[in-house]
Structures are given as structure tokens and as C-alpha cells.
Amino acid sequence: MHDFAFVFAGLFVGFIVGLTGVGGGSLMTPLLIFGFGIKPYLAIGTDLLFAAGTKFGGSLSLARARSIDWPIVGLLSLGSIPASLVTIALLHRVGASNPAVQHVMTSTLGAALLLTAAATLYKAVRGKSTPRDIAPEQLAQAIRPRHWALPIAFGALIGSLVSLTSVGAGAIGVTVLMLLYPALPLPRIVAADIAYAVPLTLVAGLGHASIGSVDWPLLAKLLAGSLPGIWLGSRLVLKTPDRIIRSLLSVLLAYAGLKLIAI
Image (cartoon, rainbow, N blue to C red):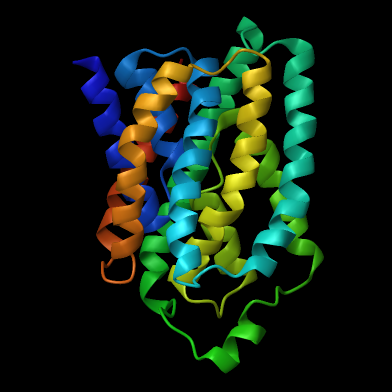
């Protein structure tokens, strides 16, 4: 029965990720901790590889549709991947299962979820003002950031946060992209966010695997549900208004964040 519940959880989270760009760590990690009683360090490590596999499946679909702006992915990765490696090296030194480290992880995760809830609500409120399409001749201008160093700096911040908590590549990443690339349509922002999260979560997840904080059988069950889920969600992203979904997500994430801080 638990096996089916894990597959269904993967399907649900994968669908939300494909539809909104939110949900990999911000939904799955608290779901594993509170819903299934998984230890925080195992939930975070497993969820990182879950996010890598899920978003890789979504990226393939988006790449075929030519929805991914690769220069944006490259700049974010220049900051996020080195920052992830440094964070994993620090966890390797102190030990991810150390009680003090677990407390830091849950507290930081709670704070990250509250920040994600605020970012999700911001996008829900601002949703109507974001274009959903753009002329090809305007795209080259739209993918230029306000300054070339800003995506790298924000990528480094998100890389550290994701490696420590598995949260940040979704809602926080999408919000950062909306601020750095205000002329870019929302579906292309979601596509870039999903694509750059693949190398980041893969590097962070393999780093966690090297210190023993990945549950491989659990990962397989989650991916069995999430891959069809993100395929379906990414197909519907152009047709589904996401305002109500994001508003409900923000409430759920805020609740999970407060609960984690109270542990």
C-alpha cells in the first residue's frame, strides 16, 4: 500500500512541477517528512535526485517544443553548480545525519518554504501582467538580463539553498527569473527554471548520495509516478491558468514551513 502511495505522491508533485515550475523540493520534501515519516536528511537527499529525474523528463518535452532559452540556463548554472559543490563539501565534513546538522536543515528548510510561499503568492498576484507569448524578433532582447553577473550571483545563492534543503530551484528560481527577465513570457520562464534545475539537483543529489543520504528504492517509486506527471503538466502549462493553483500552493507551503521551524 505504501508503494502505491509513493507512486501517487510522485505523480501529483510531478504534475504540479510541470504546470507551475513549483513543487520539486517545496512539496515533496515536507510530504516525505510529515506524510511518510522519512528522516529529514534522507528526504532531502532523495528528493534532490527525484527532482533531477523529474525535471529531466520535463526538460526533454520542453526542449522538443523549443521553449528553453539555453543562455539563461547557462548563466544560472555558472553560479549554482560551484555553490552546490561547496555546500556538499561542507556537509561531507560535518555529517548530514548529525543531530545539529539535521536541526539546521529543518530550520533552513522551513525558512526556505516560507520564502517559497511568499514567492508563489507573489507570482499568483502578478500573474496577469506577465506575457504568455512573444514575437521571435523580441526574444533576443527578452533573454538579456539586467546585468550579466546577476543570474550567476542568484544562481549561487539558489545552489547553496537547494543543496542544503532541496528547496529553491522552483518558486524562488521562477521569481528570480521574473525579476531578471521581465519581458520573458511565463511559460519560457518556467521552462528555463525546469531546465537549469536538472544539473543543479543532479550534482547536489549525487553529492548527498556520496554521504549516504539517498533512499534508492524510495527514489524509484517516486520517479515512477513523477515522470508521467511532469509530462502531463508541461503539456498543459500553456492552457491552464495557474493563479488559483499558486495561491493554494502558497498556503500549503507556508503551513509546512511553520511546522518545520517548530520542530
